[in-house]
Length: 308
Image 1: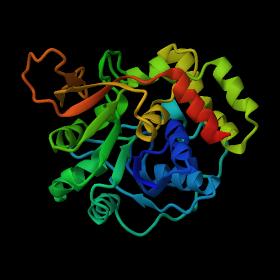
Image 2: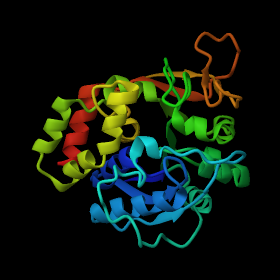
Image 3: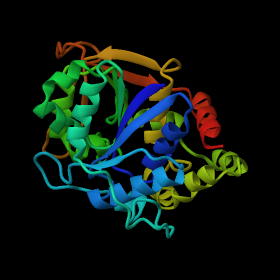
């Protein structure tokens, strides 16, 4: 069993990614750590607890940072709904997270299982940055770090002309992580809009699975689907966190480049823009593996298998 540790700001696409990991027969999800991002921390925690319960799992959920390292929290209820889960009337209150703090959990889990943990970060990187600032030794004790964030090969951004939401929310945390020496693999929003758009045909295929998790995964996209049609002009909601999880589960089909990367701290409009030194102009030492492409058919085949 591969050991996964998943850090999330649980909203509609995060929940699908969580289901994928929890349903995979070869993955042991050690814990979910939760950070503020798509929605405020308390709501993100409740969404994570609901998703774990729906999957019939007992994986602990730990609350973490409720704000970025150095700026006010900006959330995305306009994208995912006021509850982060499509505003479809789910009972997303009253559950109790595990006792403990998410950054501490990250440190403890990595130290207890050196060289064995795949850390999958699908929200702002605040929890991970805090963990690294407190315990920099964990950087070389983790097997892989798969991050959904940035736009690695080409734009556009989904919160500014060039920035992806997770990196835009807390760019200072991104800088800590990028400069930590961790074995980083970045799956950007550009990969999602190329290979993980849930078109009408894909929605029908998911509904045809006639499973509770497949229906859940479609139902909670209600607000995101409207946003996709009206704002990002995609053919349906896209799944950045699930395709990042697919890469964490099976990286073999991905096309990647090992490059030097950094983050623009700001001010707007450059805040949160991932800087990728494709041609070596900045002479940045390579520090992250950038996923340039993940095959659409492989991603959706995995999704159907795990949600069916």
